[in-house]
Image 1: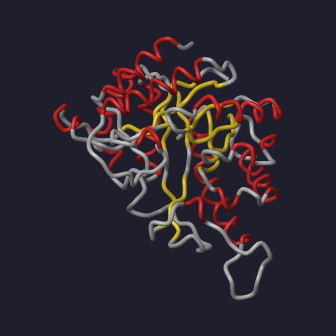
Image 2: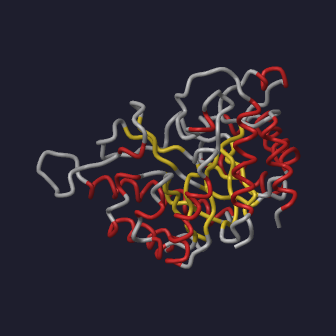
Image 3: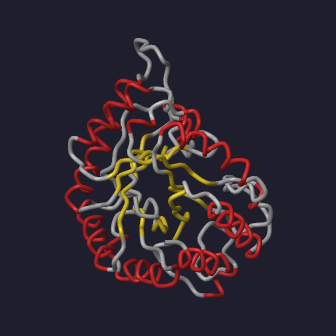
Amino acid sequence: MKYIKGITFAPFASRGEFNKPETKESLRVMKEQTHADTVIFVPCGLQETAHSEEISFDHKRNVTDEELEKMIAYARELGLRVILKPTVNCVNGTWRAHISFFDLDVPCEPKWCNWFASYTRFQLHYAKIAERTGCEMFIAGCEMVMSEHREKEWRKLITDIRGVYSGLVSYNTDKYQENQITWWDAVDVISSSGYYPIDDWDNQLDRIEKVVKQFHKPFFFAEAGCMATEGSNLVPNNWEVKGGIDLEGQAAWYQAMTEAISRREWVEGMAVWSWHGQLYSEEEAKKHRYYEIYRKPAEDVIRKFYDQVQ
């Protein structure tokens, strides 16, 4: 696997957003200013609550297939490799990691079997698009922590995906969960969300390395990010951290992360979370305390890192 110098672009974009000229311009600027060579697109599936069985993806909070395919084609025109990562969210705001059901089917209660049937339809829909458009990798979900013990169902899903998609298949587990998954042998690439404290990277990489060596698979961070908010670099996974703007703190976090992974030959890339679909002024960027790196010191850190890795 070639080293991934990636950025997640306009995650969970709503209908019509990928048709806007300014969105294409934002993707072009992303490549130009960060020197990324890979973009991750994240189509959005929705279920009402963490205990709903049905996942919908033909809705206004998701781009259409036509929009997505045109954006993939444009990304390839720019020379970017493309990874597709269809991801489920809950309408009521519950984090997807909490999607769960009784382990034994119970009459009149929501069931894993029904949910996995719906989740498989969702994933296969986009796996076919990934095949049709030549995406280099397909990531079969993100941070589905409470479902990951359902080994049989995940193995079948990966097999079903391979029936319609011929590229590399991965799954993006959440931070601290890398050593909890028993079915890494089923995928081509292990990936996880790298939201670790600024001073804890070496400890966590030591732990993850044992998993990578056990399964003999390539590994990359399918997500990695920190907000430009005071205190975020100590708990970068917490998007509810409150505080003032801390552009240098965000940059310091990326510096610590990139230095740490540079010392580990088995880490074969990362994808920054994230880059907004609509650009904004430099003055606005200085007031933007969330994860985006556009026109922030963190952008310079990423560009220098991507320039030095092969």
